[in-house]
Length: 359
Length: 155
Image (cartoon, rainbow over all chains, first blue to last red; front, side, top):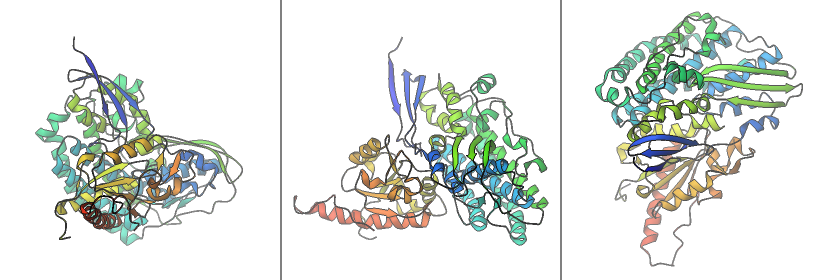
């Protein structure tokens, strides 16, 4: 029987781009228990909703997280539109879908890079981020912002994409897909990656479901939950199936995200081919009165924006449930019994977005 | 840059940013902008750091962390506040848990504007910081007590 020691991990740590603190209880080199503590990034932005008018809060909602900012803004707008019964034009729905999928591409590429960095594969990190810049160029060209887009508004979208640009985006996807296939090949078949990820941080399917794992963390353990299947925005008119892997280890979670890159590309292709002509926004009159749970699929999983209005221009309550917070209990479960050296890989495997989580 | 005798290493800490500026700081290091070709490396160790890059505002829980990291960095050191949140609190200024910019806790030498700050402006901020770093290094060579080495310079 060896002695137990506690090693602090974070908030400032070389593999963590963001602060989260874990107390790792070790027995020799094995982690017996991981105790997370959070709150280093808590800002309290939900209370800002009482100080801003509801159309202005879209900007705040977008700044919940700089990685999936567009999806946050869109989910909030969907909530308000549902309360007020606003019929958003079809073209706006398609544009929202296209931007959402580009956001997912950039988020997954970002994560794949950080994951590679976490296991010490520096070259792969750089290559993922090189490809990510292609996505950011499209986002910047069409919305005006690289990471914070600000193109969504209550009642539609602020900007239209001209037909010529859409054509070019469509043709640019082919060379981009070839580049991604090269990356995918390394993530799925390279020996170094498999050695660091296969059989590490296993989350069994029943545990994943019971602990409420969402997004790629859940789908890597065989829980086929994908909010895009509910058909918000234009997803109901597009064909796709959620990517599911059954092993529940870091490799599965990585494989889900790698394969989702191609799902996203396929969705963008379908959306660009089907996009109808027409208006991109409707005028919104009056104030929201009522409450709504708006759900969407963020790159990290299910995102819920709860909004409650009382007929004035100020919303009474906003509540955001982000996927990372939901994925923390599964993370604690995964870390029980793992080696200390695997901790960075396991922590990164849930794609922690602390900025979202603590709001 | 000929006066630079050694490569400046940076350390990035996310105080309470939304991630927007953080990923732009990382984007500076990766192939499109690639400041690593000038020897600017993102290190995780405060003891190896010359330039401390902070994003996001200060809140109740991370003020001790930021102060602690700052204290561990050896002199001469330069602090760069990246993004409007690190400068003044930005959109989150009125949030109950935000105390304001980084300069409430530690002296800041260079402020980089933007929400999120663009990689070009972050690189510009780091280059400005290199000048400040060299100035502080020169000051350290002077006899003690003559000048205040911690005194910053606003951009």
